[in-house]
Length: 296
Image 1 (cartoon, rainbow, N blue to C red):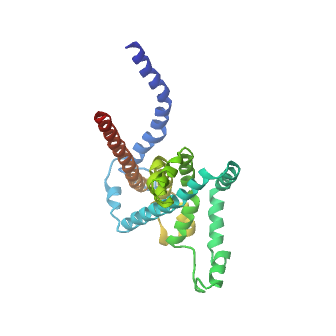
Image 2: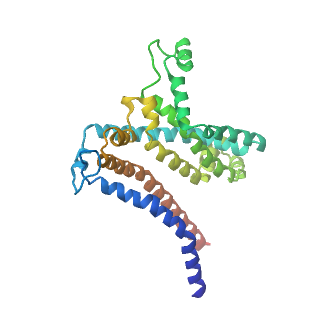
Image 3: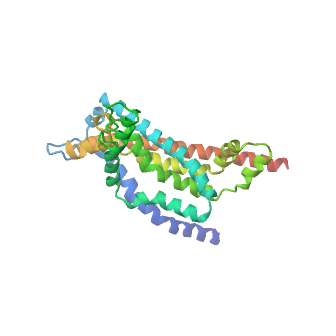
């Protein structure tokens, strides 16, 4: 009993700093945001006294469902494209010689050395009607003369994929580096093609890295506001843009809090889905394993 009690005390002492940090910088701010959504706005744009449901009623604005759907579409779309690109790249990085691997990883990390705003402005120049990319596509007659690559959802999607792709590559590569590639060779010896071995052996073997990549890409993509603001224009507004508008332009903090609560709800949906999906898979695997042990 003394040993088990001591272990529990040690576990509490080890986890308490992270729990305190989580409570101070996540739980308490989240609760404050939710509570502010039920406060009225005063004449100066601050938080008034008393409680009201008026801010919640304002979320029934007919424009908001379209913005929510657009946010989900661009967030999920950019995540899906990033994962599809990261899977073969992670596989390749785990198989190449170390010198080439280090060079490629350096090239992937280099964009982080540049300010995020500068990178978005670089894309704005690249996609501008007088930019090199648009001129080239018009020259080869892929685009008409009056075509524009800026201020549309496709520009937002392209810049999102560029910005968040490294966050997808690194977890996939970290999982692929620990993968036993002899399993793929064994699958091929049993008659599987290289493509079948990739999808049926490699991808399930790095599933944790894939789910991690989905989370770390999807969450910032759903909350993005700088990318759609600079390259998307008014036709590509996301929830993050509305929160910034209500905070800095309209100075309506309760409404911004209500939109932030809505965004947190949207973000928590995929997190709960991933937790439930991975948990159910573990329980199924454990049940199968226990049945196999009993049969033996």
